[in-house]
Image 1 (cartoon, rainbow over the protein chains, first blue to last red):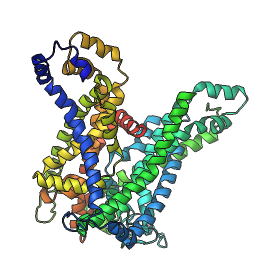
Image 2: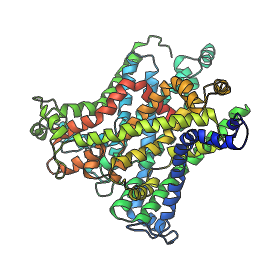
Image 3: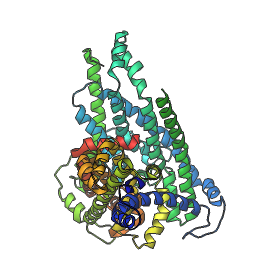
Image 4: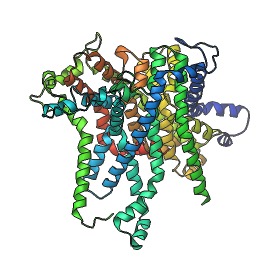
Length: 309
Length: 285
């Protein structure tokens, strides 16, 4: 701000009136930015602090060290949630990556109706997870959905009861999540494919590479930075998944589809265990950091290499 | 890449994309068809089927008839709640984000990079880290279980996205333009109004669509901070499913789902290009 003040004339009285004159501008710049930054920092510290207190129904002061953390980590609920997160995170990210890449490659083959197809593959992203979860809970419900349809068509031995099957229920969340967000991977991959330098392709063709070979050897390898971005964004979604599970299985049957975000909500607002709920939230943050920090380091190194080259 | 006319592989490509397109469309088609079938008809068969006679009454019931707990007002009050949360929060977060984005990219002031860096951390911080503090803050300022409370949350949290979008767009504007205007004596707001805003319509559309879609579809804060008649439509859908769990009314529920999803679907259909741009801009950060 000081550099602008130099255009004002003289010190003293006029400087004060200058400050008053420019007050609206300071407020417009600083109030939103400070509110945003302050809530991020103070809320994080606040939640971390609560996680070290014996708070139950209401936040209280006091210090219990890591007791909330050990209690959460030892609970069956969290252990199931963490195992589910591993399975869900890996399966969902891999499958949506493969689906997205396949769709992007197919759409990149100069096919007719590309715009319509792209619109179809991306529309689930405009729909809320609550709607997605609700609709898939109907389709996958053996009594009313796909299994019932196939039975009505005459194939009565058909079985598709993952929604109510403890061992398979987590896969229903994988299915719905892929339906909802593989279009995102497709959009990023397609943008990547379209931005490949045409000179590289020409050079490969002059070297005698056929179209398929060019695609595999020259075009696709340029996609790996995008792949990492897609993985990180999708993992970020998987780690904090809540709405989708709430609408699709609500963590059930039993606690078979429990995920960390549901554990946090359950502890905070259903069991009134604020300290443990906060500890579970901090654990979620740590899981997220385990993904984001390496990603940030990778981005930093890449940028540095790019500027040195 | 060029098709050398080997037809079988082209046919295979079309077959695969058509199958995928059918799979992506299927849930929507099923729900639309169901919203026009009577509950008896669905109960006899499955969710998946062609309507025997068009039961438009499902929509009337979904809109203003069905009961959740003691209130029988349909989905209408919750749609109104969502509208009253989404529109103010979208406008506020976009406007404040545009001004702040302009300030950190072109106006520059001491500490701008720092505060911008902190604000963008909001893209990553899980909502669960903010749930308890928001609960306490809203209670202390008397906004728990109010639409205003949710507008406040979505405005402040949305700033992380809107500032990022606008800042990344504005950095491409040449600094000379701003410097020249400043030498001519134009101030902060005058430059924003006369130079920046006229250049901003693409990024403002992207930001508005992004914010609207996200706030409309938001569930966690809605279900945590509001109850009963104050809930947004996402929370009301869950409450509806729970309320009719014993005697499901799939026809009416399907109509309610369609109504609740319609605003963001329409925005996507008419502003798809901008929607996708927001998606990729949010990802590449």
